[in-house]
Amino acid sequence: MKQNAKVPKVNMAVQLAGLTLKNPVMPAAGTFGFGEEYAPFIDLNRLGAIVVKTITLQPLIGNPPPRFMETYCGLLNSVGLQNPGLEVFIREKLPYLRRFSPPLIVNIAGKTIDEYAELAERLSAAEGVAALEVNISCPNVKEGGIVFGTVPEMAARVTAAVKRHTHLPVIIKLTPNVTDITEIARAVEDAGADALSLINTVRGMAIDIKTRRPALANVVGGLSGPAIKPIALYAVWQVAQVVKIPLIGMGGIMTAHDAVEFLLAGATAVAVGTAGLVNPRALSEIIAGLEHYLLEEGVEDIKELIGAIQL
Image 1: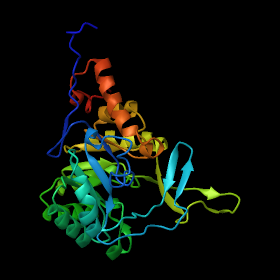
Image 2 (image 1 turned 180 degrees about the vertical axis):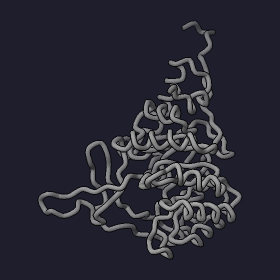
Image 3 (image 1 turned 90 degrees about the vertical axis):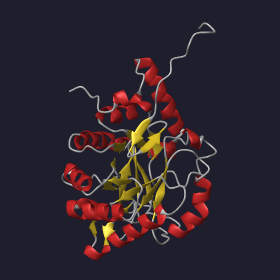
Image 4 (image 1 turned 90 degrees about the horizontal axis):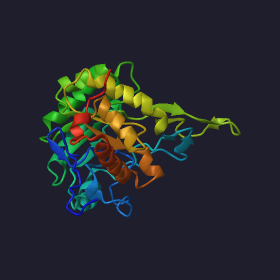
């Protein structure tokens, strides 16, 4: 190449619910800790956004071990939302996260709608938080343990409550463990959601044939990894047909190839979870791989890929 030859440039930036992301790649909640764990392996400033593990009002120790089980092409987990609680997050974790330039998205979960509202209000007053991702795969203790995200009306109530208590963009994370995910998506969009994340883990279990007992102490867990990618991709494509708000696609994304599929299906951004547990540099490699793909295909702007599937 001649010295004065120009290296082609591609635009990797996307707009997500009012946030500008330098690229569409972020970690999935629950797999990235609070960022410090991955800082020795990747440049956190290279990420499109930083997403921390779920925060609840009070500290949670999570489920008893064993709570991880490797499966064919995937991982079963029943961690149980272990986290230090809101006060410790704001006091001890947030100052570190403020050092970095990507928007900070905080995932929240509650046992009641009032808990979601309080989390939203208090995090909205905390410096450095750019958006809230709402985990509605949790049981509502006041409604007999019904999971918020499985009933459209209940999912909408959580969304509306969070919206009333924050000025930040609200991203609702959808569970795949429903009959029709598009029904939930429409309900939370109508209730004011600014974006959607999909999908959360798929419910599953494993059995130890020697002891004849469940492999996980909690009996059931959430399946993630490559095994669920076709399910997640289909869900993103389905939901993209019925809502107008942007989507963050996730579920089995291991490579840039996988990320491109989600963009083509209709996702504006992607989140990477299990891949980072296997390879802590996966996020950086996927970002670099996306850039390479755009150059190779002659695509100048990554937004050209969003929803560009040819049917």
